[in-house]
Image 1 (cartoon, one colour):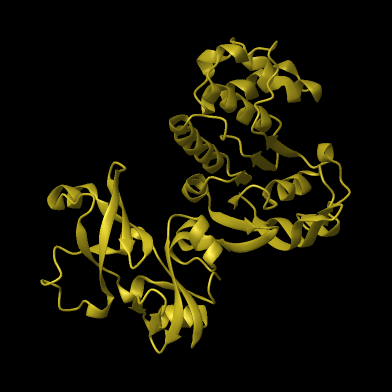
Image 2 (cartoon, rainbow, N blue to C red; image 1 turned 120 degrees about the vertical axis):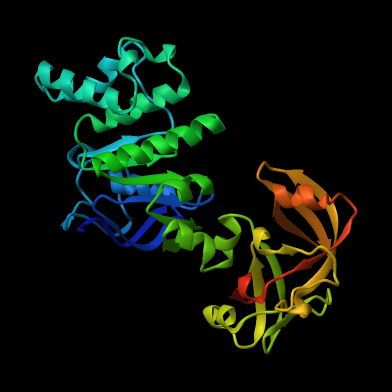
Length: 366
């Protein structure tokens, strides 16, 4: 698999504001990558530099080995899909999709063939004579997607294309985008602030924060093995405990709470002593039936009692907000387990924190 896009030491400044800092990245041919991060982290600026709408202050952008820093957007042959559909309201769906080909003076027969092919790809063949105002938001975004594909772009860039749509439509349409990308084998670079969206459709996720890349990895690795506290906090939900590392135990002298942690977690953090921040996902915490009948392989030092403050039903998951040693934590259990236990607000319950399910980060608030 060849490299499509390579960013080498890319920095972008707007006056005194540094939007992107010393970025290095490779995007492979046929790959679907997502830039994920909060507003202002630099993800859209990076996409605009790849598209050619912004020029790097420093660094090189290569496409198939050639430097393209000074190549104008029209010469890059990259398709672009924005958050706003930007469809021509006075043109039919067919005319919108074929517009780019018409501007390139492609023969009408070839335009018609290409448009029909793409409309069938996204299930809109029966909508080709309608005008954009007659379509739903999801249908309009499908039209915007295939319009960008009509001219056979070598890379498709998507800037938060689904953020204006309702939640259910977003879920369906992101699956559609992934299906189209897989069928066509096209390289896609996608910008989003929606973690679920990024994890569900991409081959790799690029997590950004304050202009830096925090982590580049497969979605499952981003979730299971975040490399920084920021990634653990931004992607999914995590509970954090700060304390001092003493052998294999992290102790917080202020709250009196302590946890035993496996050597593997501490080794991954490069921590041998000093301040440590622990992280554990809500679904990893075990709700015990009582504090007495504890499985033999459980480390009793990691059994803690907490008081349930709020119970929220989320479908297959029931989420509890728990008061534990002066700190609020989140615990997730299955709906089946909830039905069996019937926990409710103000219950005092025992929880088990498996030593091997902690992630450790050096320093407090690291």
